[in-house]
Image (tube, rainbow, N blue to C red; front, side):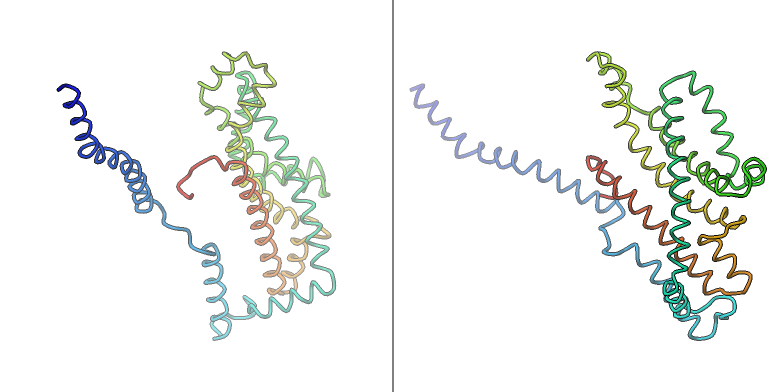
Length: 297
């Protein structure tokens, strides 16, 4: 009798409630995932737009072209887009544009390399040592409040008007964002990772390699994006100071003779170089931090 009752109960569970519970258990995670996805699409910035970053520049170019074609924009103040394209072709044909771009790129990359190296070393010293922070953080914060371009008169007195002054000015512009963001990333590393490293008995070099550097990488890459932009901004100014080559030198000569088309070519080149370098840093950031899930994903 008991055996029959047990079998009947099992049959009832199998044909009655159990399938419903199984179905509910299978459907619950899917439903929660779907709800998260719907909430994310509703509250987030929305789905990616194909070539969305090109919308603004294309709209600006269309307005510029329309204003030039209708005569609303005086060509003496701003040359038409087709005139700029023709001028760029002439500069490329005689080799002036390539030569000046190469000179400017070497200056910018040299200053960026020195600035990144110095900023990273200072951030590591200040981020991993209280004494280092006391010695370094204050002067860097003071430098942060002083624009690098405001130091040009003093740098000219110290280093003259040659290449050294230009590279040092660019390096100072790149140093501050690298230091600020890397130092902040170091200071915000979860203390539980430090405790775990102490529990495992990691040596100082292994602690730096496996805990500190991965923890500081997001901040360093963010600072790198700001540093790249700062390098091109500083370059545009220092090339106006006794330069004999470079994009800024080419634009300075064009200003003297009222050649707005050449000035626009120089501005476009600056913009393209900045956009390309920022894109490279973003690509490295996307690959190196592929484990992160952000609102933009």
